[in-house]
Structure formats: structure tokens, C-alpha cells
Image (cartoon, rainbow, N blue to C red; front, side, top):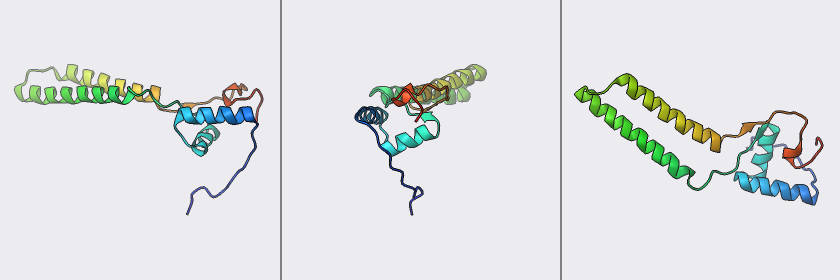
Length: 123
């Protein structure tokens, strides 16, 4: 059974439809998911650039290398654990910031400006 059983139909003019289609394509979401995000107060972000995932893989590889270095250092006793933990946390934060900056939807605050929805007045 569908979790969303209520169907809502509405009309757009040509300009609004073209704007919606363009925004949906940029986000990579379906029209339904895009509109649900807006209803819930979020503005979906555009799809990340093609090299985004390769950058993330590289950062994760660095993290794995740091982990291997830490393991080796722990067995030999030649590393400052505080310094290593600081660097590992920095790396983790950098990865998280990249993910958030590129893919996480942003909370939309209602300031009366509906220009980001493709019109100059409230719906």
C-alpha cells in the first residue's frame, strides 16, 4: 500500500512549468520529491559536480591511510595520539562539510520573497 494516497493536481502556466522542469532536472529528484521538499521547507540542491564523488573517494582514502598509520604507530609507539586524533577529526569534518555543502538541502526561511519559487507572489 502507498504511504502517500492523497493526490493533488494543480495548474501552472508555461513559464512556471519550464522553471519547475529546470529546477527538478538540476536537483536530480522526481517532480513529486522536489515539491515535497519545498512543502517541508527545504530547497533541494543541484546535483553535485561529476568530480564530487572522486573527491570524496580521495578523502576517504586519506582517512584509511591515516588509520593504517595510526595502527602501525600504536604497535611501535611512535605517534602522539592527541595529534593523530585531531587530524582524524579534521578530516572527518572536512568530508562532512563537503557532503553538506554539495548535497544536503538547505532550510528555506519564509521572508516573503517567493522569487526562488519562480514567481513574485505567494502561491
